[in-house]
Length: 622
Image (cartoon, rainbow, N blue to C red):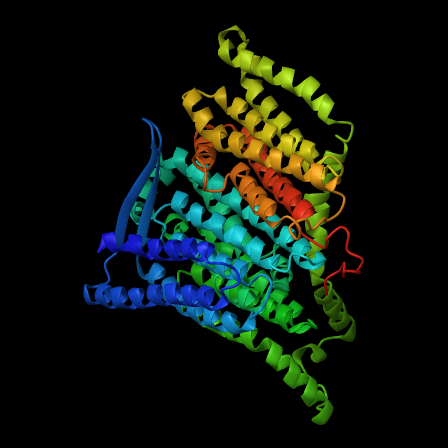
Protein backbone atom coordinates (compact mmCIF):
# COMPACT_ATOMS: atom_id res chain seq x y z
CA UNK A 1 0.00 0.00 0.00
CA UNK A 2 2.88 2.40 0.73
CA UNK A 3 3.97 2.57 -2.92
CA UNK A 4 0.50 3.87 -3.87
CA UNK A 5 1.15 7.14 -2.02
CA UNK A 6 3.48 8.45 -4.72
CA UNK A 7 0.65 8.40 -7.28
CA UNK A 8 -1.30 10.97 -5.24
CA UNK A 9 1.62 13.35 -5.83
CA UNK A 10 2.26 12.32 -9.44
CA UNK A 11 -1.32 12.91 -10.65
CA UNK A 12 -1.55 16.66 -9.81
CA UNK A 13 2.06 17.14 -10.99
CA UNK A 14 1.15 15.59 -14.34
CA UNK A 15 -1.96 17.76 -14.56
CA UNK A 16 0.04 20.92 -13.87
CA UNK A 17 2.60 20.07 -16.59
CA UNK A 18 -0.15 19.29 -19.14
CA UNK A 19 -1.97 22.55 -18.35
CA UNK A 20 1.23 24.52 -19.03
CA UNK A 21 1.38 23.08 -22.56
CA UNK A 22 -2.23 23.94 -23.52
CA UNK A 23 -2.71 27.22 -25.44
CA UNK A 24 -4.46 29.98 -23.47
CA UNK A 25 -7.33 30.30 -25.98
CA UNK A 26 -8.40 26.67 -25.47
CA UNK A 27 -10.64 27.34 -22.47
CA UNK A 28 -12.62 24.13 -22.80
CA UNK A 29 -9.52 21.92 -22.89
CA UNK A 30 -7.91 23.78 -19.97
CA UNK A 31 -10.94 23.42 -17.71
CA UNK A 32 -11.53 19.78 -18.68
CA UNK A 33 -7.91 18.89 -17.93
CA UNK A 34 -8.18 20.64 -14.55
CA UNK A 35 -11.33 18.99 -13.25
CA UNK A 36 -10.46 15.74 -15.04
CA UNK A 37 -7.16 15.50 -13.14
CA UNK A 38 -8.72 16.56 -9.85
CA UNK A 39 -11.66 14.20 -10.42
CA UNK A 40 -9.32 11.30 -11.16
CA UNK A 41 -7.40 12.14 -8.00
CA UNK A 42 -10.62 12.25 -5.95
CA UNK A 43 -11.93 8.93 -7.30
CA UNK A 44 -8.53 7.31 -6.82
CA UNK A 45 -8.48 8.40 -3.18
CA UNK A 46 -12.01 7.11 -2.55
CA UNK A 47 -11.05 3.65 -3.86
CA UNK A 48 -7.77 3.72 -1.93
CA UNK A 49 -9.54 5.02 1.19
CA UNK A 50 -12.07 2.20 1.21
CA UNK A 51 -9.30 -0.37 0.80
CA UNK A 52 -7.29 1.37 3.56
CA UNK A 53 -10.27 1.23 5.94
CA UNK A 54 -10.92 -2.41 5.05
CA UNK A 55 -7.28 -3.21 5.93
CA UNK A 56 -7.79 -1.67 9.38
CA UNK A 57 -6.61 1.90 8.55
CA UNK A 58 -2.89 1.27 9.20
CA UNK A 59 -0.37 4.12 9.37
CA UNK A 60 1.66 4.14 6.14
CA UNK A 61 5.15 5.57 5.66
CA UNK A 62 7.18 5.66 2.44
CA UNK A 63 10.77 6.94 2.34
CA UNK A 64 10.73 7.86 -1.32
CA UNK A 65 13.83 9.78 -2.45
CA UNK A 66 17.15 10.64 -0.78
CA UNK A 67 18.07 13.99 -2.35
CA UNK A 68 21.33 14.58 -0.47
CA UNK A 69 23.34 12.57 2.03
CA UNK A 70 26.58 13.02 3.99
CA UNK A 71 27.99 11.35 7.10
CA UNK A 72 26.18 13.79 9.40
CA UNK A 73 23.20 14.90 7.29
CA UNK A 74 20.47 13.39 5.16
CA UNK A 75 17.77 15.23 3.17
CA UNK A 76 15.05 12.89 1.95
CA UNK A 77 11.45 13.04 0.76
CA UNK A 78 9.13 11.03 3.00
CA UNK A 79 5.41 10.34 2.51
CA UNK A 80 3.05 9.58 5.38
CA UNK A 81 -0.62 8.56 5.48
CA UNK A 82 -2.92 8.32 8.49
CA UNK A 83 -6.34 9.57 9.57
CA UNK A 84 -5.23 13.23 9.48
CA UNK A 85 -4.03 12.90 5.88
CA UNK A 86 -7.19 10.99 4.94
CA UNK A 87 -9.45 13.74 6.33
CA UNK A 88 -7.54 16.55 4.64
CA UNK A 89 -7.38 14.64 1.36
CA UNK A 90 -11.12 13.90 1.40
CA UNK A 91 -12.02 17.54 2.03
CA UNK A 92 -9.37 18.93 -0.33
CA UNK A 93 -10.14 16.69 -3.31
CA UNK A 94 -13.90 17.22 -3.09
CA UNK A 95 -13.71 21.00 -2.69
CA UNK A 96 -11.05 21.45 -5.37
CA UNK A 97 -13.14 19.38 -7.78
CA UNK A 98 -16.24 21.50 -7.15
CA UNK A 99 -14.37 24.81 -7.39
CA UNK A 100 -12.68 23.88 -10.69
CA UNK A 101 -16.09 23.13 -12.22
CA UNK A 102 -17.45 26.40 -10.81
CA UNK A 103 -14.45 28.34 -12.17
CA UNK A 104 -14.95 27.03 -15.70
CA UNK A 105 -18.00 29.26 -16.11
CA UNK A 106 -17.17 31.98 -13.58
CA UNK A 107 -13.93 32.96 -15.37
CA UNK A 108 -15.20 32.46 -18.93
CA UNK A 109 -13.29 34.79 -21.33
CA UNK A 110 -11.23 36.20 -18.47
CA UNK A 111 -7.78 37.39 -19.62
CA UNK A 112 -5.96 35.18 -17.11
CA UNK A 113 -8.07 32.03 -17.64
CA UNK A 114 -5.07 29.79 -18.40
CA UNK A 115 -3.02 31.39 -15.64
CA UNK A 116 -5.79 30.71 -13.10
CA UNK A 117 -6.07 26.98 -13.86
CA UNK A 118 -2.27 26.62 -13.98
CA UNK A 119 -2.07 28.14 -10.51
CA UNK A 120 -4.94 26.08 -9.12
CA UNK A 121 -3.27 22.84 -10.23
CA UNK A 122 0.05 24.11 -8.87
CA UNK A 123 -1.67 24.84 -5.56
CA UNK A 124 -3.26 21.38 -5.52
CA UNK A 125 0.18 19.83 -6.05
CA UNK A 126 1.55 21.78 -3.06
CA UNK A 127 -1.47 20.88 -0.97
CA UNK A 128 -0.97 17.16 -1.58
CA UNK A 129 2.77 17.32 -0.88
CA UNK A 130 2.01 19.08 2.41
CA UNK A 131 -0.64 16.68 3.69
CA UNK A 132 1.30 13.58 2.56
CA UNK A 133 4.58 14.83 4.06
CA UNK A 134 6.34 12.45 6.40
CA UNK A 135 8.90 14.92 7.77
CA UNK A 136 9.33 18.67 8.13
CA UNK A 137 11.57 18.91 5.05
CA UNK A 138 8.95 17.37 2.75
CA UNK A 139 6.25 19.49 4.38
CA UNK A 140 8.35 22.59 3.70
CA UNK A 141 8.37 21.81 -0.05
CA UNK A 142 4.56 21.85 -0.14
CA UNK A 143 4.50 24.82 2.25
CA UNK A 144 6.57 26.91 -0.20
CA UNK A 145 4.37 25.93 -3.15
CA UNK A 146 1.26 26.97 -1.24
CA UNK A 147 2.87 30.32 -0.42
CA UNK A 148 3.82 31.29 -3.97
CA UNK A 149 0.53 30.06 -5.45
CA UNK A 150 -1.30 32.19 -2.85
CA UNK A 151 0.68 35.23 -3.97
CA UNK A 152 -0.11 34.56 -7.64
CA UNK A 153 -3.84 34.08 -7.04
CA UNK A 154 -4.23 37.19 -4.86
CA UNK A 155 -2.43 39.18 -7.57
CA UNK A 156 -4.51 37.48 -10.29
CA UNK A 157 -5.84 40.86 -11.45
CA UNK A 158 -2.26 41.99 -11.86
CA UNK A 159 -3.09 45.19 -13.73
CA UNK A 160 -4.77 46.63 -10.60
CA UNK A 161 -3.06 48.30 -7.67
CA UNK A 162 -4.90 46.76 -4.70
CA UNK A 163 -4.59 43.03 -5.55
CA UNK A 164 -0.83 43.38 -6.10
CA UNK A 165 -0.34 45.47 -2.94
CA UNK A 166 -2.29 42.98 -0.82
CA UNK A 167 -0.51 40.01 -2.40
CA UNK A 168 2.83 41.45 -1.25
CA UNK A 169 1.37 42.01 2.26
CA UNK A 170 0.17 38.42 2.50
CA UNK A 171 3.50 37.08 1.22
CA UNK A 172 5.32 39.05 3.92
CA UNK A 173 3.30 37.22 6.61
CA UNK A 174 3.85 33.89 4.89
CA UNK A 175 7.60 34.55 4.89
CA UNK A 176 7.56 34.82 8.69
CA UNK A 177 5.86 31.43 8.85
CA UNK A 178 8.43 29.96 6.42
CA UNK A 179 11.35 31.03 8.60
CA UNK A 180 9.59 29.73 11.73
CA UNK A 181 9.46 26.34 10.05
CA UNK A 182 13.14 26.57 9.02
CA UNK A 183 14.15 27.35 12.62
CA UNK A 184 12.06 24.41 13.87
CA UNK A 185 13.91 22.12 11.44
CA UNK A 186 17.25 23.64 12.52
CA UNK A 187 16.76 22.89 16.20
CA UNK A 188 15.15 19.49 15.60
CA UNK A 189 18.35 18.41 13.80
CA UNK A 190 20.34 19.24 16.93
CA UNK A 191 17.78 17.64 19.24
CA UNK A 192 17.45 14.29 17.45
CA UNK A 193 20.73 14.33 15.48
CA UNK A 194 18.83 13.16 12.41
CA UNK A 195 16.13 14.17 9.94
CA UNK A 196 13.26 13.14 12.23
CA UNK A 197 10.09 11.73 10.64
CA UNK A 198 6.53 12.12 11.90
CA UNK A 199 6.39 8.33 12.29
CA UNK A 200 9.22 8.52 14.84
CA UNK A 201 7.56 11.46 16.61
CA UNK A 202 4.74 9.08 17.56
CA UNK A 203 7.28 7.10 19.58
CA UNK A 204 6.77 8.58 23.07
CA UNK A 205 9.88 6.97 24.56
CA UNK A 206 12.13 8.42 21.83
CA UNK A 207 10.74 11.96 22.14
CA UNK A 208 10.69 11.89 25.94
CA UNK A 209 14.29 10.67 26.15
CA UNK A 210 15.54 13.59 24.05
CA UNK A 211 13.38 16.21 25.77
CA UNK A 212 14.32 15.25 29.32
CA UNK A 213 17.75 16.85 29.03
CA UNK A 214 16.81 19.45 26.41
CA UNK A 215 13.47 20.84 27.59
CA UNK A 216 14.22 24.41 26.43
CA UNK A 217 15.08 23.19 22.94
CA UNK A 218 11.73 21.37 22.87
CA UNK A 219 9.90 24.57 23.86
CA UNK A 220 11.78 26.54 21.18
CA UNK A 221 10.81 24.06 18.46
CA UNK A 222 7.18 24.11 19.62
CA UNK A 223 7.09 27.92 19.60
CA UNK A 224 8.53 28.07 16.08
CA UNK A 225 5.89 25.58 14.90
CA UNK A 226 3.21 27.71 16.60
CA UNK A 227 4.47 30.87 14.84
CA UNK A 228 4.28 29.06 11.49
CA UNK A 229 0.79 27.77 12.26
CA UNK A 230 -0.43 31.19 13.45
CA UNK A 231 0.93 32.96 10.35
CA UNK A 232 -0.58 30.40 7.95
CA UNK A 233 -3.98 30.25 9.71
CA UNK A 234 -4.24 34.04 10.33
CA UNK A 235 -4.21 33.85 14.12
CA UNK A 236 -3.16 36.81 16.29
CA UNK A 237 -1.26 38.99 15.57
CA UNK A 238 -1.35 38.00 11.88
CA UNK A 239 -5.14 38.01 11.48
CA UNK A 240 -5.57 40.98 9.15
CA UNK A 241 -3.96 39.36 6.10
CA UNK A 242 -6.90 37.04 5.39
CA UNK A 243 -9.45 39.72 4.32
CA UNK A 244 -6.73 41.32 2.16
CA UNK A 245 -6.33 38.00 0.40
CA UNK A 246 -9.92 38.25 -0.85
CA UNK A 247 -8.78 40.59 -3.66
CA UNK A 248 -8.41 37.54 -5.90
CA UNK A 249 -11.23 35.82 -7.83
CA UNK A 250 -14.08 34.37 -5.76
CA UNK A 251 -13.19 30.69 -6.56
CA UNK A 252 -9.61 31.18 -5.33
CA UNK A 253 -10.89 32.93 -2.21
CA UNK A 254 -13.16 29.96 -1.55
CA UNK A 255 -10.59 27.22 -2.01
CA UNK A 256 -7.63 29.05 -0.46
CA UNK A 257 -8.80 31.37 2.27
CA UNK A 258 -12.09 29.76 3.14
CA UNK A 259 -11.23 26.09 3.22
CA UNK A 260 -7.83 24.57 2.46
CA UNK A 261 -4.79 26.84 2.67
CA UNK A 262 -6.00 28.70 5.77
CA UNK A 263 -6.31 25.37 7.66
CA UNK A 264 -2.65 24.41 7.06
CA UNK A 265 -1.77 25.85 10.47
CA UNK A 266 -4.25 23.43 12.00
CA UNK A 267 -2.64 20.60 10.03
CA UNK A 268 0.91 21.26 11.26
CA UNK A 269 -0.31 21.43 14.88
CA UNK A 270 -2.14 18.13 14.48
CA UNK A 271 0.85 16.52 12.79
CA UNK A 272 3.35 17.64 15.46
CA UNK A 273 1.00 17.08 18.42
CA UNK A 274 2.96 14.02 19.73
CA UNK A 275 6.03 16.25 20.07
CA UNK A 276 4.51 19.01 22.27
CA UNK A 277 1.73 16.91 23.81
CA UNK A 278 3.45 16.81 27.23
CA UNK A 279 4.62 20.45 27.18
CA UNK A 280 1.87 21.96 29.32
CA UNK A 281 3.05 25.55 28.87
CA UNK A 282 2.89 25.23 25.07
CA UNK A 283 -0.60 23.72 25.19
CA UNK A 284 -1.80 26.58 27.40
CA UNK A 285 -0.24 29.12 25.04
CA UNK A 286 -1.95 27.56 21.99
CA UNK A 287 -5.31 27.55 23.79
CA UNK A 288 -4.93 31.20 24.92
CA UNK A 289 -3.91 32.24 21.39
CA UNK A 290 -6.92 30.45 19.90
CA UNK A 291 -9.33 31.92 22.44
CA UNK A 292 -7.99 35.47 22.00
CA UNK A 293 -8.17 35.19 18.22
CA UNK A 294 -11.68 33.79 18.33
CA UNK A 295 -12.99 36.63 20.51
CA UNK A 296 -11.26 39.40 18.57
CA UNK A 297 -12.13 37.99 15.13
CA UNK A 298 -15.79 37.53 16.09
CA UNK A 299 -16.04 41.22 16.96
CA UNK A 300 -14.31 42.24 13.73
CA UNK A 301 -16.60 40.00 11.66
CA UNK A 302 -19.70 41.70 13.09
CA UNK A 303 -18.71 45.19 11.91
CA UNK A 304 -17.53 44.40 8.36
CA UNK A 305 -19.28 46.07 5.45
CA UNK A 306 -17.89 43.56 2.92
CA UNK A 307 -19.39 40.07 2.82
CA UNK A 308 -16.02 38.50 1.94
CA UNK A 309 -14.31 40.19 4.90
CA UNK A 310 -17.10 39.04 7.20
CA UNK A 311 -16.70 35.44 6.06
CA UNK A 312 -12.90 35.71 6.42
CA UNK A 313 -13.04 36.89 10.04
CA UNK A 314 -15.70 34.30 10.86
CA UNK A 315 -13.39 31.60 9.51
CA UNK A 316 -10.51 32.98 11.61
CA UNK A 317 -12.70 32.79 14.72
CA UNK A 318 -13.58 29.15 14.03
CA UNK A 319 -9.92 28.26 13.44
CA UNK A 320 -9.15 29.82 16.83
CA UNK A 321 -11.62 27.39 18.39
CA UNK A 322 -9.96 24.51 16.50
CA UNK A 323 -6.64 25.59 18.05
CA UNK A 324 -8.27 25.25 21.48
CA UNK A 325 -9.56 21.77 20.61
CA UNK A 326 -6.08 20.65 19.49
CA UNK A 327 -4.51 22.04 22.67
CA UNK A 328 -7.08 20.08 24.68
CA UNK A 329 -6.11 16.87 22.84
CA UNK A 330 -9.47 16.54 21.05
CA UNK A 331 -8.01 15.41 17.73
CA UNK A 332 -11.14 13.87 16.22
CA UNK A 333 -13.26 16.89 17.15
CA UNK A 334 -10.66 19.20 15.56
CA UNK A 335 -10.70 17.16 12.32
CA UNK A 336 -14.50 17.16 12.22
CA UNK A 337 -14.55 20.90 12.94
CA UNK A 338 -12.03 21.52 10.16
CA UNK A 339 -14.14 19.65 7.61
CA UNK A 340 -17.32 21.46 8.63
CA UNK A 341 -15.70 24.90 8.60
CA UNK A 342 -14.07 24.24 5.21
CA UNK A 343 -17.31 23.15 3.53
CA UNK A 344 -19.31 26.01 5.08
CA UNK A 345 -16.85 28.79 4.15
CA UNK A 346 -16.42 27.48 0.60
CA UNK A 347 -20.19 27.49 0.13
CA UNK A 348 -20.56 30.96 1.65
CA UNK A 349 -17.84 32.47 -0.54
CA UNK A 350 -19.13 30.90 -3.74
CA UNK A 351 -22.67 32.19 -3.18
CA UNK A 352 -21.61 35.55 -1.70
CA UNK A 353 -22.13 37.54 -4.95
CA UNK A 354 -25.70 36.22 -5.19
CA UNK A 355 -26.39 36.86 -1.50
CA UNK A 356 -25.31 40.49 -1.84
CA UNK A 357 -27.75 41.06 -4.71
CA UNK A 358 -30.57 39.39 -2.73
CA UNK A 359 -29.86 41.52 0.34
CA UNK A 360 -29.89 44.74 -1.70
CA UNK A 361 -33.30 43.85 -3.04
CA UNK A 362 -34.66 42.79 0.34
CA UNK A 363 -33.66 45.99 2.14
CA UNK A 364 -35.79 48.01 -0.27
CA UNK A 365 -38.88 45.81 -0.34
CA UNK A 366 -38.83 44.15 3.09
CA UNK A 367 -37.36 46.59 5.59
CA UNK A 368 -36.60 45.11 9.01
CA UNK A 369 -35.48 47.20 12.00
CA UNK A 370 -32.18 46.32 13.66
CA UNK A 371 -32.55 43.48 16.13
CA UNK A 372 -31.39 43.66 19.73
CA UNK A 373 -27.92 42.12 20.21
CA UNK A 374 -25.82 41.13 23.21
CA UNK A 375 -23.71 44.28 22.80
CA UNK A 376 -26.71 46.47 23.56
CA UNK A 377 -26.70 45.22 27.15
CA UNK A 378 -23.21 46.66 27.72
CA UNK A 379 -22.58 50.22 28.96
CA UNK A 380 -22.68 52.54 25.96
CA UNK A 381 -19.11 53.79 26.40
CA UNK A 382 -17.81 50.21 26.43
CA UNK A 383 -20.03 49.24 23.51
CA UNK A 384 -18.82 52.15 21.37
CA UNK A 385 -15.18 51.52 22.34
CA UNK A 386 -15.43 47.88 21.29
CA UNK A 387 -17.14 48.93 18.06
CA UNK A 388 -14.35 51.34 17.17
CA UNK A 389 -11.63 48.83 18.06
CA UNK A 390 -13.25 46.15 15.91
CA UNK A 391 -13.79 48.64 13.09
CA UNK A 392 -10.06 49.49 13.20
CA UNK A 393 -9.25 45.76 13.43
CA UNK A 394 -7.72 46.33 16.88
CA UNK A 395 -4.94 48.28 15.16
CA UNK A 396 -3.22 44.99 14.27
CA UNK A 397 -1.88 46.42 11.00
CA UNK A 398 -0.47 49.43 12.86
CA UNK A 399 1.09 47.07 15.42
CA UNK A 400 2.83 45.04 12.69
CA UNK A 401 4.08 48.16 10.96
CA UNK A 402 5.26 49.86 14.16
CA UNK A 403 7.15 46.94 15.67
CA UNK A 404 8.19 44.92 12.60
CA UNK A 405 8.23 46.60 9.19
CA UNK A 406 8.96 50.23 10.17
CA UNK A 407 12.17 49.33 12.10
CA UNK A 408 13.30 47.32 9.07
CA UNK A 409 12.60 50.25 6.74
CA UNK A 410 14.31 52.67 9.12
CA UNK A 411 17.44 50.53 9.21
CA UNK A 412 17.42 50.23 5.41
CA UNK A 413 17.06 53.98 4.93
CA UNK A 414 20.13 54.56 7.10
CA UNK A 415 22.06 52.79 4.33
CA UNK A 416 20.84 55.23 1.71
CA UNK A 417 24.38 56.41 0.99
CA UNK A 418 25.20 53.07 -0.66
CA UNK A 419 25.41 52.99 -4.45
CA UNK A 420 26.39 50.23 -6.85
CA UNK A 421 29.90 51.64 -7.11
CA UNK A 422 30.36 51.80 -3.32
CA UNK A 423 29.08 48.26 -2.93
CA UNK A 424 31.60 46.98 -5.46
CA UNK A 425 34.47 49.08 -4.05
CA UNK A 426 34.00 48.29 -0.35
CA UNK A 427 32.15 45.01 0.05
CA UNK A 428 33.75 42.93 -2.68
CA UNK A 429 37.27 43.45 -1.23
CA UNK A 430 35.85 42.82 2.25
CA UNK A 431 34.41 39.52 0.99
CA UNK A 432 37.77 38.55 -0.51
CA UNK A 433 39.40 39.26 2.85
CA UNK A 434 36.75 37.07 4.53
CA UNK A 435 37.50 34.21 2.15
CA UNK A 436 41.22 34.67 2.85
CA UNK A 437 40.53 34.53 6.62
CA UNK A 438 38.53 31.32 6.08
CA UNK A 439 41.32 29.53 4.20
CA UNK A 440 43.94 30.69 6.71
CA UNK A 441 41.77 30.59 9.81
CA UNK A 442 44.67 29.15 11.83
CA UNK A 443 46.23 32.60 11.64
CA UNK A 444 43.10 34.28 13.05
CA UNK A 445 43.04 34.75 16.88
CA UNK A 446 40.33 32.56 18.55
CA UNK A 447 38.41 35.56 19.92
CA UNK A 448 38.11 37.14 16.47
CA UNK A 449 37.43 33.76 14.86
CA UNK A 450 34.33 33.27 17.05
CA UNK A 451 33.01 36.73 16.12
CA UNK A 452 33.54 36.47 12.36
CA UNK A 453 30.44 34.31 11.56
CA UNK A 454 28.10 36.78 13.32
CA UNK A 455 29.90 39.77 11.75
CA UNK A 456 29.55 38.33 8.24
CA UNK A 457 25.88 37.45 8.87
CA UNK A 458 25.25 41.07 9.94
CA UNK A 459 26.89 42.36 6.73
CA UNK A 460 24.60 40.05 4.73
CA UNK A 461 21.63 41.40 6.66
CA UNK A 462 22.68 44.96 5.81
CA UNK A 463 22.70 43.94 2.13
CA UNK A 464 19.05 42.88 2.14
CA UNK A 465 17.97 45.81 4.32
CA UNK A 466 19.32 48.17 1.68
CA UNK A 467 17.74 46.09 -1.10
CA UNK A 468 14.35 46.08 0.65
CA UNK A 469 14.24 49.89 0.95
CA UNK A 470 15.90 50.76 -2.38
CA UNK A 471 13.62 52.91 -4.57
CA UNK A 472 15.80 53.91 -7.50
CA UNK A 473 18.35 51.33 -8.63
CA UNK A 474 16.55 48.05 -9.33
CA UNK A 475 19.59 46.17 -10.54
CA UNK A 476 21.57 47.18 -7.46
CA UNK A 477 18.73 45.89 -5.26
CA UNK A 478 18.91 42.57 -7.14
CA UNK A 479 22.71 42.38 -6.75
CA UNK A 480 22.46 43.07 -3.01
CA UNK A 481 20.02 40.15 -2.59
CA UNK A 482 22.52 37.81 -4.27
CA UNK A 483 25.44 39.18 -2.24
CA UNK A 484 23.49 38.45 0.96
CA UNK A 485 23.56 34.72 0.19
CA UNK A 486 27.31 34.83 -0.41
CA UNK A 487 27.84 36.51 2.98
CA UNK A 488 25.59 33.91 4.68
CA UNK A 489 27.56 31.07 3.08
CA UNK A 490 30.82 32.67 4.22
CA UNK A 491 29.57 33.11 7.79
CA UNK A 492 28.52 29.45 8.10
CA UNK A 493 31.77 28.28 6.49
CA UNK A 494 33.65 29.04 9.72
CA UNK A 495 31.68 26.28 11.48
CA UNK A 496 33.26 22.85 11.32
CA UNK A 497 31.99 20.16 8.94
CA UNK A 498 30.63 22.77 6.50
CA UNK A 499 32.55 21.74 3.43
CA UNK A 500 33.19 23.60 0.18
CA UNK A 501 30.80 21.22 -1.63
CA UNK A 502 28.02 22.38 0.70
CA UNK A 503 28.73 25.98 -0.24
CA UNK A 504 28.57 25.09 -3.94
CA UNK A 505 25.27 23.29 -3.39
CA UNK A 506 23.82 26.33 -1.62
CA UNK A 507 25.08 28.97 -4.05
CA UNK A 508 24.56 27.04 -7.32
CA UNK A 509 20.93 27.98 -7.91
CA UNK A 510 21.44 31.51 -6.56
CA UNK A 511 24.42 32.19 -8.86
CA UNK A 512 22.84 30.86 -12.07
CA UNK A 513 19.34 32.28 -11.63
CA UNK A 514 20.72 35.46 -10.04
CA UNK A 515 22.72 36.16 -13.21
CA UNK A 516 19.67 35.18 -15.30
CA UNK A 517 17.47 37.66 -13.41
CA UNK A 518 20.06 40.44 -13.74
CA UNK A 519 20.20 39.96 -17.53
CA UNK A 520 16.38 40.17 -17.69
CA UNK A 521 16.38 43.44 -15.73
CA UNK A 522 19.13 44.79 -17.96
CA UNK A 523 17.20 43.89 -21.11
CA UNK A 524 14.01 45.45 -19.73
CA UNK A 525 15.92 48.61 -18.81
CA UNK A 526 17.17 48.85 -22.40
CA UNK A 527 13.66 48.43 -23.80
CA UNK A 528 11.63 50.60 -21.43
CA UNK A 529 14.15 53.07 -20.04
CA UNK A 530 12.82 53.14 -16.45
CA UNK A 531 12.45 50.25 -14.00
CA UNK A 532 12.82 52.10 -10.70
CA UNK A 533 11.16 50.71 -7.55
CA UNK A 534 9.28 53.87 -6.57
CA UNK A 535 6.04 52.72 -8.24
CA UNK A 536 4.39 49.79 -9.98
CA UNK A 537 5.22 49.55 -13.68
CA UNK A 538 3.00 46.68 -14.87
CA UNK A 539 5.42 45.51 -17.56
CA UNK A 540 3.91 42.01 -17.59
CA UNK A 541 1.26 43.51 -19.89
CA UNK A 542 3.84 44.23 -22.63
CA UNK A 543 6.46 41.62 -21.72
CA UNK A 544 4.67 38.50 -20.39
CA UNK A 545 7.53 36.14 -21.31
CA UNK A 546 10.09 38.28 -19.50
CA UNK A 547 7.75 38.44 -16.49
CA UNK A 548 7.47 34.64 -16.37
CA UNK A 549 11.23 34.20 -16.76
CA UNK A 550 11.98 36.74 -14.02
CA UNK A 551 9.48 35.05 -11.69
CA UNK A 552 11.43 31.79 -12.10
CA UNK A 553 14.64 33.68 -11.32
CA UNK A 554 13.02 35.15 -8.19
CA UNK A 555 11.92 31.70 -7.03
CA UNK A 556 15.37 30.24 -7.54
CA UNK A 557 17.17 33.04 -5.70
CA UNK A 558 14.70 32.91 -2.78
CA UNK A 559 15.32 29.17 -2.23
CA UNK A 560 12.16 27.77 -3.82
CA UNK A 561 12.40 23.98 -4.43
CA UNK A 562 13.45 24.19 -8.09
CA UNK A 563 17.22 24.36 -7.51
CA UNK A 564 19.74 22.73 -5.10
CA UNK A 565 19.64 25.99 -3.09
CA UNK A 566 16.49 24.68 -1.39
CA UNK A 567 18.49 21.82 0.12
CA UNK A 568 21.35 24.22 0.78
CA UNK A 569 19.17 26.44 2.99
CA UNK A 570 18.34 23.50 5.25
CA UNK A 571 21.98 22.45 5.15
CA UNK A 572 23.04 25.96 6.20
CA UNK A 573 20.88 25.85 9.32
CA UNK A 574 21.88 22.29 10.17
CA UNK A 575 25.47 23.54 10.57
CA UNK A 576 24.56 26.43 12.88
CA UNK A 577 25.21 25.20 16.44
CA UNK A 578 22.44 25.29 19.02
CA UNK A 579 24.39 27.83 21.09
CA UNK A 580 24.84 30.22 18.13
CA UNK A 581 21.57 32.04 18.75
CA UNK A 582 22.75 35.37 17.29
CA UNK A 583 23.98 33.71 14.11
CA UNK A 584 20.67 31.87 13.68
CA UNK A 585 18.72 35.08 14.39
CA UNK A 586 20.59 37.23 11.87
CA UNK A 587 20.55 34.49 9.23
CA UNK A 588 16.80 33.85 9.60
CA UNK A 589 16.06 37.59 9.62
CA UNK A 590 18.06 38.05 6.42
CA UNK A 591 16.07 35.19 4.83
CA UNK A 592 12.78 36.90 5.74
CA UNK A 593 13.81 40.26 4.30
CA UNK A 594 15.52 38.56 1.37
CA UNK A 595 12.25 36.99 0.25
CA UNK A 596 10.38 40.27 0.71
CA UNK A 597 12.98 42.23 -1.26
CA UNK A 598 12.81 39.73 -4.14
CA UNK A 599 9.02 39.65 -4.36
CA UNK A 600 8.95 43.47 -4.07
CA UNK A 601 11.25 43.80 -7.08
CA UNK A 602 9.08 41.43 -9.10
CA UNK A 603 5.84 43.15 -8.09
CA UNK A 604 7.11 46.70 -8.67
CA UNK A 605 8.60 45.96 -12.08
CA UNK A 606 6.09 43.57 -13.63
CA UNK A 607 2.78 43.91 -11.74
CA UNK A 608 0.29 46.68 -11.00
CA UNK A 609 -1.17 49.32 -13.34
CA UNK A 610 0.92 49.95 -16.41
CA UNK A 611 3.17 52.94 -15.90
CA UNK A 612 1.81 54.63 -19.05
CA UNK A 613 -1.85 54.13 -18.14
CA UNK A 614 -3.97 57.31 -18.07
CA UNK A 615 -6.66 55.81 -15.84
CA UNK A 616 -6.92 56.33 -12.08
CA UNK A 617 -6.64 53.32 -9.79
CA UNK A 618 -7.90 52.75 -6.24
CA UNK A 619 -5.09 53.09 -3.70
CA UNK A 620 -6.79 51.96 -0.52
CA UNK A 621 -8.75 48.83 0.34
CA UNK A 622 -12.07 48.74 2.18
